Length: 113
Image (cartoon, rainbow, N blue to C red):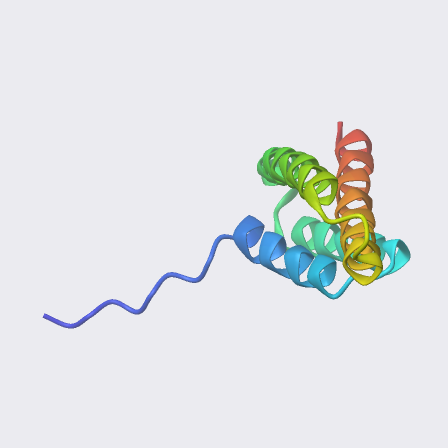
């Protein structure tokens, strides 16, 4: 029996991975917002209008995951050594990137509602 090729990751999985990479690199909030907007635009263009409800659901799921990520990142920042200025700066920049992604997804949800 032939092996099936592995299924590609779901779009939201790929999106979360990409957004996590941006946050790890402490991408500025404008870059993150543009990435989210491009991602949502691509999804909408690649999906028939009759299935846009699925895109809305995917965006809602991503928003929820990022909201949890923002909360977890804030808790990690609270636990950082205050004397580690570089660590604090990196963590704050990553948190800002996560917040930008979360906020851009919230805006996309409102536009699709």
